[in-house]
Length: 423
View (cartoon, rainbow, N blue to C red):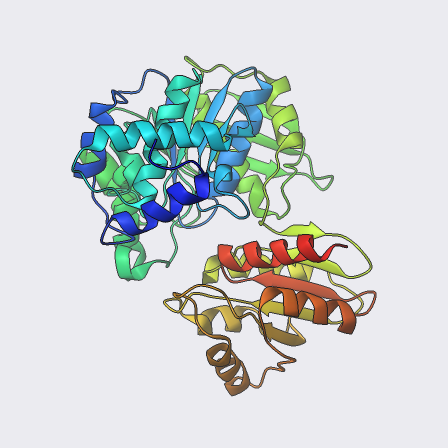
């Protein structure tokens, strides 16, 4: 074995390939074939979209596990531990298992160079085979058409939403982005579009390649009751009085409706009872998505990093106002357009705390301060996560709220600091 700790393996992988992001399927597919990972021997559900991917995979895991299936779920990025990316039977794969997968991949690849993400994708598929899962749930990392998970043919493609994000890779309008994400669709295999306002290019692509396309509001519907319970009407069946999804935010009904429709497409190989649907909806968990750390001062952590996701965050702030002041910890990548995010949150934040992220791709705290002050926003201070957590604990009062958002790295670093500094 090349290395004896998971961290050492990951550090080596980070420098192995000349480009951190290198879309394309040739290299990773070649290694997958050497490992005998294709075609899949169990059903595959692939999830792509701008927002809602992680929530949808979490819902699929919770419902299918409640139905007695052993799931293999691959997601990215992680928050606290790399192991979060590969879950088997609902639990994170341990270091030893992941290292064994990395070793098998390293031996098989020969002279083929692989990126960090490609290593992880292959490791997940290798472990899913070794651990005899019943179904593979694959979350696209970036785009869809050229993402490493797209080397596997899904039995159902779930498209959660299309918004403006990663324009430097995917295009600068919703049709261009939709074309990339719809690249996970396959001929004669169903696809579900769960988001609002589907770009027309997706329908055109589905028609051209004979993909049965089921669109929210057309092929399936849902209705939420005042009590929080909800009804779902699919292509062939319906469910009434389902419990509300345990994940926070009204958009989770939309995500859950898309998931139920994808599962309806799989009722042949993966039948799911109403009892499993209800249990999964009530048990589902996912860190970093409108995650609340309760207390006299509430902390609300959300990985929102594009305008659509921040709009959902703003809706949650309106829905659950606090009696005190709202503080915001913001860390964001340099490639992101900050202005639309700030506009969406105008009037919701009383004071800002720009985070100095430990990431070469992040916008610096002084840059964020300048942009905030140009808009007339109040900035209390900046620093790294431990410093900001300590200061916020000193300067907030009962009834205040601290909102942490802007990227996965932002939530990761703040969560680490909260844990290390204790309650």
